[in-house]
Image 1 (cartoon, rainbow, N blue to C red):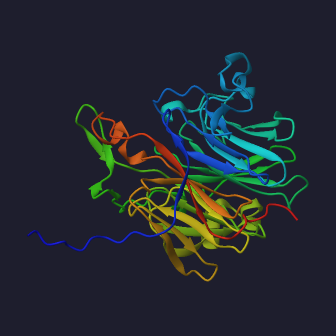
Image 2 (image 1 turned 180 degrees about the vertical axis):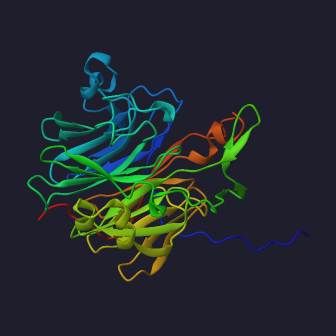
Image 3 (image 1 turned 60 degrees about the vertical axis):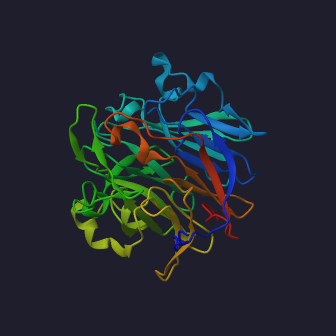
Length: 365
């Protein structure tokens, strides 16, 4: 009789909120009224609309199908390839458009941050970027907000370039002034010694012609403290967590070369894609190497709250008014570009949630 051997233990009560049988999603956000929005960047799948709302169990293009159709004549008002959507808790959905389908060079004038009024479902404002902010190598990834500073607040965006410098882009929302900070710094750059291992195998670029190269992506995950004073961030290909004072980031009298002395190192949290903060200052992050979700307490203590074989690449996080932590699980590591042109993803992709009993960190007083 064959003996029953010990196996790895899994834990964490996860629920599937939605199953995706079409294009692969990356971003999710839950508004203060419980509306759920997702996005689908154009990475090779048949993306019919790059931003959608999950409405009564169905995906609906948001705010309209027309907005999701690329219009060369009105490129600032149409979505090209959206990587991130963020509801700010006060009636606005923010859409971060990379304008870089398939990680191409961003279309000039197309990379943007778009504010949509959730009451009228209409675009309220569009922020575009100059060529010294969005570089030919830039890939706009994720964004966080603080409306307690400045006349209209600030946005902080990660540039997760695979070919150029990583950075945090600071945007003054009153006038759209934007500038790069920690440009090419060690804390926003891929860890050159990091060898990602997912599902027991080394993750690297494996091209259809048989050539290979290391998988390298710069600053990606970003989270902001409940008082807006601290920004947490991490490169995608790294296990390290960093933070910096947002006041220091906004202060342009401090040269960028001196910012490195203001960066705080929090240690290894696992290799993460997205991050999010709750109202008590706890940072939630995925660990895509270990099918896990972690939380980092304000004192630096790290705990795993979910470890499950279905957590196949935890991507973006959001916390809803129902005090659930929502996460997109999208099998990013199984894409064809990592497997000599063979797509190993298995549908459906999932939107999961786990009860945490906390509200999201506020963005305003």
